[in-house]
Length: 342
Image (cartoon, rainbow, N blue to C red; front, side, top):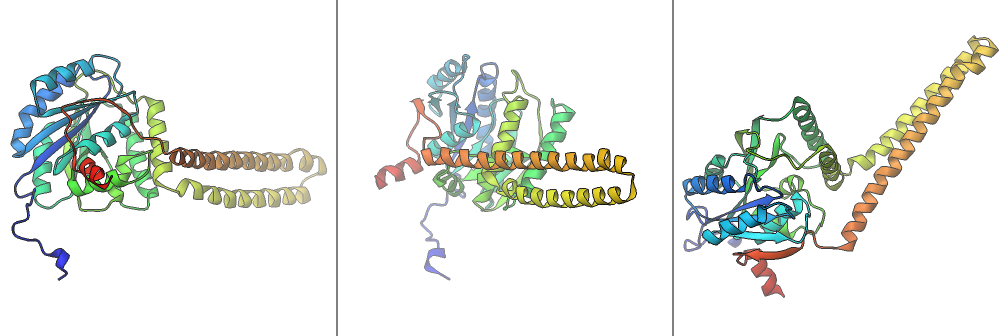
């Protein structure tokens, strides 16, 4: 046995001693639900048997979300607030929360109460048993249309097939991460982030916690069809190089189609009258080949362009988020190590 694998009996084990639990909650225009969310969290979290902190990230809200959060933080020192300088998006807001979380375990949960906080104690028990990532897996999803359910299910399975590492399906961002996983994710250098792909990429031991997803308590979803499509495109292009390779498949397919069309045109020329051959099948075959060629070339250029744009964004090395102000935020282990290194 190597020396590094031996644990000294006096070394603190945060899982056996319960440690500190951090909650990371991104918020964008959640004034109608945020107080109910906090009340429900405060009622549930003591059942986890850990000290806890709650980090709310205001992601450029334009309603009274920040005002309500400030009122909550003024009464509860366990509440910390990150106010971002503008709306940077949910993935950036969650990443900002992870970077500031101090916990031995960190739970990511949305503010809309679709993911029930009552599941958190079960996640903590899994973590204390040795699981590094306890992720919520949905049995059902209330309050959503059949179209949304079908498209979400198809996307999750397509994404899992295209990504070169195991990805759990029927999951969202609701999960518990061990401190080691949080540090590994925060250390990744990419600026454009998709946590549902990054967390599984790090490895570690993952286990599901099954639950029924509720309808929103109040307000409306922030993800319309356009934003969902953009998120899906980001997820695929950031996490997989399969779309790029599909252009080669399309090229080969186009060559086969062209060969079949040319063969069909040749046979038609030999078996039909000259007028039929020149005005009928041959013209249709030519149009088909040209159409396929144009479509494949355009798609290939677009896919390459998407990768080039994202490479350019990474090369710019702009921060993923900008914090305008903090309330009750204490230094996290990650920030402490950064300051020591500096």
